[in-house]
Amino acid sequence: MNNERTGTEKRIIAVVGVPRSGTSAIAKGLDALGIDIGKALHSPSGVGNEKGFFEDADINSLNYGLLKILTGKPDNAILINLSNIPEKAITIFKDTAKNILKERLSNTDIFGFKDPFIAKLLPIWQEIFKELKLNVSFVVVCRNPKSSAFSMVKRGNMDIIIAYYIWLSGMVSVLDCILNPVLRFDSVFVDYDDMLENPEAQLLKIALRLKLKVDHENNPAFKEYMTDFLTNSMRHAAFTIEDLRIDENIPPKVTEFYILLRKLCSENFSITDLNVAREFIKIKIWLKELRSTIFFMQASYNTLLAMNEVLIDKENKIAELSKTIDAPSQK
Image 1 (tube, rainbow, N blue to C red):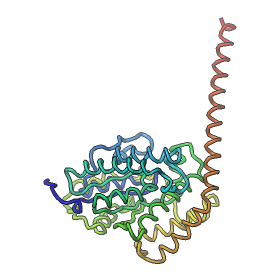
Image 2 (cartoon, rainbow, N blue to C red; image 1 turned 120 degrees about the horizontal axis):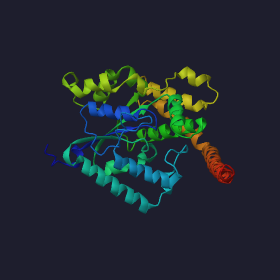
Image 3 (tube, rainbow, N blue to C red; image 1 turned 90 degrees about the vertical axis):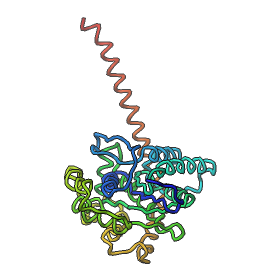
Image 4 (tube, helix red, strand yellow; image 1 turned 180 degrees about the vertical axis):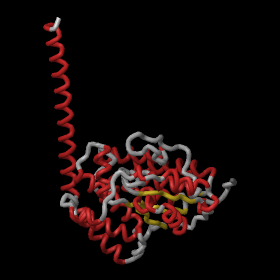
């Protein structure tokens, strides 16, 4: 394919969401729609992503590295103030990202990617897209926060309450950027459970909303995605909105925000609806006011984890020493 064209004809479709929300499966859905998602993908993992992550390894490493510098760990529960990042660091990040995107788009007019850590860095990426004059669309992946939180806890050593705030702060960051009237891009909202229940309808919704030309009836990859790739084994937990309401461990705003996202997924609300902006602003303000509390809670939990590791290490050393002491008496 000849790609000697202007930058405005190049297109990016970014799958955005939070960790353990189904972004990998839906990124594979882009591939089933005929979107180039590149070759530099992370290898499948035996823990939670047996069929693959379908995320660009270079983009993932770039986002992971910056978040680790900013917060100590990429899956942080607080909203990040990107205005505090030194300008030189932003420039290096943007130059690296631009080189990656230019390389990915060198042999195609449309490139799709996903990364679970991009949510809180979207303002920077939106500037990158704008400076490269790219036509950009977002596939916003939603998942019941209880399912996401349980998956985070199962996969890593994490407190369930912190996991809920990781979900909330990540999804708030995504919507905050998409609602930005200056940098607004096309977007479509997809719930992971809906994709598992009716993948054909969800894939066609993505294609329709993002104006993608898809011959799904004659596309083997489309059929393979629905019949072979997506299976019930990919859903390790399934919860309803009522499950959220009756669980006292779940912050109420988490439930409220998921209800809002469900309306966007079912298209009962449009992203341009004023009611969406009003509800979102209230939740965002509430989350920002809790920033110091969430920071303290996460820092305290991390301290407990570190202390526990020290205790385990000491117990192991005591056990080894006991074996050494007992050894002569057994001869």
